[in-house]
Length: 58
Image (cartoon, rainbow, N blue to C red):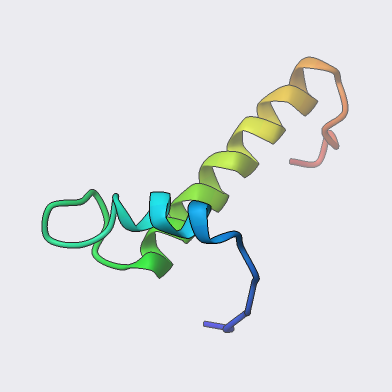
């Protein structure tokens, strides 16, 4: 799996960390970020579909 590097504001990182760990929804930051990206892309696909912007090949 490729690795990437991103810069995010400290406040956003702290919010993310609230959902990571033994008491959180995610095992680690990577899992949380992957889930967030998947969810965001799903939402964008739904918006594109409503506006007939998706390719018919999909």
